[in-house]
Image (cartoon, rainbow, N blue to C red; front, side, top):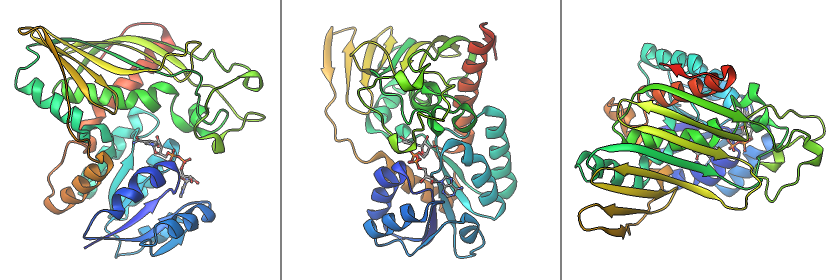
Length: 351
Ligand SMILES: NC(=O)c1ccc[n+]([C@@H]2O[C@H](COP(=O)([O-])OP(=O)(O)OC[C@H]3O[C@@H](n4cnc5c(N)ncnc54)[C@H](O)[C@@H]3O)[C@@H](O)[C@H]2O)c1
């Protein structure tokens, strides 16, 4: 039996981790913590297996019964909460991105090593069935050599929580690149066999809500965190660039908002024997260069959050690092950091 504390009772807690935990055995959730007690209390009402609600996460860290904590707070709090938890001797499952930049991410990885605790990152797509199959197909040589990957993570006018934590660089680390791009690049590097980045160039734009009050939108997720009157919007709403890795090159476009209705959320893997388009979060199609036929995958897509949470708990037991261990995710964070740096200085960067 493992005793858990869940820190942060917002959207990802409600939509992903509490439902996943509710289906798992061998755990008890002793604490649900949120700075806003009403959010923790509402969670307890909806998920009655939660034993207590608290506002100060140190209560859970000081409790010797707690084995592990989930850090489901906004990005800026990942570092502090995770470091405190590791130093208190807890294993940590921290949501993506690791934190707001690469330097702090490295510190988190070093602290986990020092404390001898598991620190996993919520790059859940590594446990998505389609991603697992594509990774295996690449290892089996079905693509031949994957020489290029193109990815698009573009939506029409859907900047989240305008003026709040999502659009304030000091709190989020960036905009569409760090929020959506993290998933796309992480799964690409994973499928390519933990590819290492060699050099890259990037341009970032923040064009759509320069004047927050006149920004018009079709949808605004995280609207409860918006502060259009007094808040900040200093992050990228469009991002584009080119990356060379030791496996394949990658080109990409990402948009939280664009003046095009098309929503393009997919990744194309181009190999000399075969190619695949992965519809993000869904199935994929594979074109075989020998038969000249395209086959659409048809498999069940189990709950990737449940799989990543179960794998985290198993890692605690075995001590074996799984695919979401921070040591496997640092390259993704280095990539994101370097893309932002390239966009800032408007030059190519060698890593
Ligand atoms: N893996 C995914 O697909 C995915 C999807 C969405 C969000 N996320 C990540 O999850 C994290 C949370 O995102 P969200 O959309 O749930 O945000 P949210 O704003 O809905 O929820 C965050 C909650 O954390 C609470 N909080 C902040 N600081 C705290 C502290 N020190 N102690 C206790 N509670 C604290 C806030 O009050 C809030 O209720 C972000 O890092 C985000 O990038 C991941």
